[in-house]
Image 1: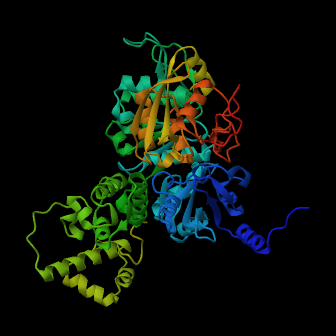
Image 2 (image 1 turned 120 degrees about the vertical axis):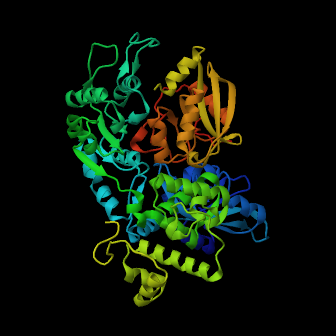
Image 3 (image 1 turned 180 degrees about the vertical axis):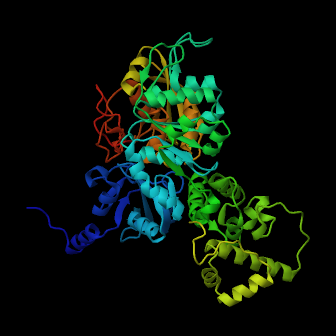
Length: 465
Length: 154
């Protein structure tokens, strides 16, 4: 006859099994001693496998190595809560979680080990994104209309297998978009490879793309397969296609039309099924008129065209992008930077980002050099952003004299108003509301502070549409 | 790219091979995405003969790929890894052996000998040979002769 458990123990077990939070306990050797049903579901590890294993083998959190909350709890006998962490499950998915830890103490007050409770925040994150109107594909995230239009058609573009031309200023994320197309396509299991056509002279570019046979030129001691051969059924991104020579353009056109290529020094042609994505920061139609780009190649690659907007045309994405970069830098550098101060944000919103998203990322990386925790302030921004009034940021001005108090107040007011206007696409009613003032007050202040507005009318059309 | 069985054959023939391992002290780092140390190990005839420890920045997968290439390492052994860095590593032509756990020394001995992966896989990783289909480990299904039978790592 089996020994029955005391009722209290059974009830505790039922409760532990029915809650949606994952719970596990460890002993002093970090071996898992209990593991509830929710923990099984969230981690994807069955209880039988988890019990007796080291907690880091099962839990697999980014905190395990450097900032283990359970370790701190065991050392200090105190509870800890960690809000922004993740675990990796067996399907290679990052699961955002919150964690709380407590010492496991017996009736005599002895610490037997530790207990960790964790909650899956995937749904919360998803809902947060939806509420924020975000659209996310791969590494690309946006809430702007211009980007949402692109991202929403991306699955169809990926499925089509047609050649795609991605255009956009430098730093707008052309390679990220190409990667997203590849990962959404049926070729996602195959190789994605990118080559910067502008960085290589013709002969080197051809040998990189098409490969060569031994003896094709001095130093070619053995056969080398090119990217077309390596990519096989994968995707090749030809970046900076506008920088290639006319001679190369002819050869590329032939490959695209005949779907075969000839390695240097070879007499045989090899079939290719790789998908081609071309990218450029130049206006190819203008280059055709100037005789710098072949019209026939342009029409061959311009089957589906995706035009990435510059960052200044999607400024509503700025807080989202900043948030993403701050999170990424925190992970990389083991920091606890919480975000960007209002004043710093107003500087960032007033800048026009000629280097686009790459420039913004560099600005945040710069700020991380000076700011180790708390908020990124104006003083942490690069000099060209912090020396200037917000509405003039990005433009070169001579050293300004020290401002008197009233001037400083006016300057701060100007910053806040310009930032609010930009944030709301120059819709004055919305800007006034966000500033906590009446529309008429905003009009008075615009006049008093001599703030000139662009021709765009925020009431009838969206600033970034 | 050669798989691990082929690497072992090459190593057995006295040829030098290099492998990268993300480590945490004397163990395999539990999470590649948060790992800070990359160990490059040279193996001859399946035995480690030289190693080099390098600092890496979590989240910078391209940096890891560059270091592996510079050192001539053809494979990376690591702990849990999320889809994005895993894809980058595999796209970079590096053989990925993920969701491995245990003491580095023992894992390397396993790798060099071509023994069974059992006992070195993290719990919850039974989807062997699934590769890019998204599950843990791709290195199962090889012909293994020996190795601990799903032991608890020490």
